[in-house]
Structures are given as C-alpha cells and as structure tokens.
Length: 331
Ligand SMILES: [Fe+2]
Ligand SMILES: [Fe+2]
Image (tube, rainbow, N blue to C red; front, side):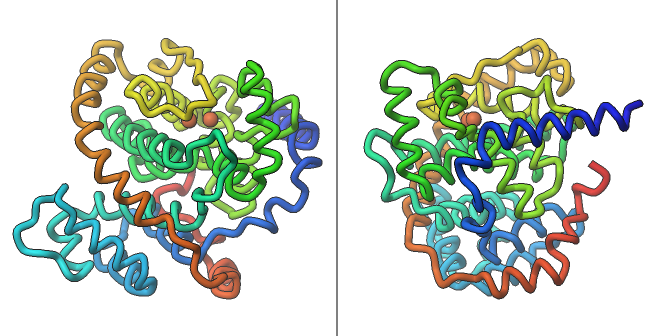
C-alpha cells in the first residue's frame, strides 16, 4: 500500500516535470555539469569520517580555490595577527566547519558565473540569499538535530539551484520570467506559466548529478514541504530558513516564501519560544558574518577553469556518485 502510494507520487512528479519544465529545457542535465572539486567537496562534507587532512588534500588539488580560501582566511574579518599561508594552518585557526562552508560557497560561485546576468536581477543578492539560507539551515539543524548540519548547509546553499541555473545558463528564458514578474505576476505563478519551475529545475540537476535523495527532496520541496513524499524534515527546515533569510534582510527578491510556520516548527521539533531565541541571535550574528561572504562571492566570481568533465566522469564511475554514502546513508 505504502509502495503504491510512493509510486503514484513518483508518477505524479514525473508528469509535473514533463508538463512544467522538461519540454522547455531538454538536455539540461547534459548542459550543466558539476566540477570535480565540488563533487569531491560534497563527498567529504557528507562523510562523517572526514578529517581536516582530507579537506586540505582536496583543496591542494585545486590551487586557485586553495589560494582564495587562504586569502579569505587572511581577511580582516578573522583578525589574524600572523598571516595564514597554508590550508593546514587555515583549518587550524579558522576551523574545519568554517572552511568547509567557505570552500563550498567559493566553489559554487566559481562554477556559476553570475556576472553576466539579465538586467534587473542582482547576482550578488542571489548568492547572499543562498549563503544566508545555508548558514541558517546549518544552525537550525544543530539545535533541532532533525538533519545532519552539513547536509542542511548544502541543501540551503543549493535550494535556489534552479534560479542559479536559469540566470547563468538560460538568460533568455529568465528574462521572460522577469518581464512577467515586472508586470506584477507572482514569481511562482510566472515560472509555472512559462514551464520554468526553479524547484523542479534544481531537482532535475541534483538528480542528474546523483546527489543524495535528501538534497533532491530538500530542493524540490523547499516551497512546499507538506507535499514532500519522503522525509519532510529537510524540506521544512529549508523552508523555514528561506523565510528567516527574507526576514533578516537577505531575500531572493523575486520570491515571497510563504510558510506554514506551525507545520514547519512541528516537523523540525522546534518550539515557538526557541524559534524566537534563535531569531534574536540570528539578527545580530548574520550581519557580522556577511561582509566576509561578500568578499567570498567577489573572490569566487572568476571564469570557471578548464572543463573537468573527464575527471568528473571518472570520479562518477569511480564511486563519488555511487558512493555518496557518508552522513546521508539511509536517508
Ligand atoms: Fe525558492
Ligand atoms: Fe530562497
């Protein structure tokens, strides 16, 4: 019975995808690949056995990214008296978790160049929003313990993957979307009418990249956690984080993340009083870390390096895609 229900939900989803996106952006999975370093970083972040040495090794294989991480570590934000010159030292001083976040943010902003985007849209605002949701989701996961903090961080970072892809790879289609929203059509309605649902596009990519189910579902249902057929915690957590990022002044201008607050709190097991405390801390801590993020985004915004498809494919067959076991297994 449960299996039939799940199969029906899957069939519905495939129909929805066909109706809403696939015919507008055929071959999307082939067009947009995830670079080798990002794949490896994701694998590391999801493996609870990962040691700082592993992160160091991965970054050393991408000298340009490593140089940026080191340069950011030396930014005024961390107030170091002795400059850091190696990843090993950066990890020691700044902390493994912070470096993971920094490497992911930098890697993603390198992968998707948002400097040439349609007029009327602000790429930096989109990154800032994604980083805020990522950060809030990680903190919420730490206090609620309903999801792995690293997974919440990644899902938060990728929750607007569909918008990032539209803006960076399909500017013409995105322009049509902007025209509709400028004419007063709500964003989610506009994308539906154009067959460009960002939640579905992000999901298609995440599925194509063989990211774990928990990310796929978190991305697909970040605006509709109630309809998530699997574990709803991640979708509800990202939905709430999205809403809080907007409240904290880091919106993705186009969307207005409606939220069923009572439902989200129930699913992630957070009391209204604890939410209030969390928001209080958030409102003071978020503005403190953001100048550093802006630096990070600007550092990341360079042209992507040589295509890494060959290495990427061998990594896929070698196990990263098949081997996203780590912290996600069983979810
Ligand atoms: Fe969204
Ligand atoms: Fe969002």
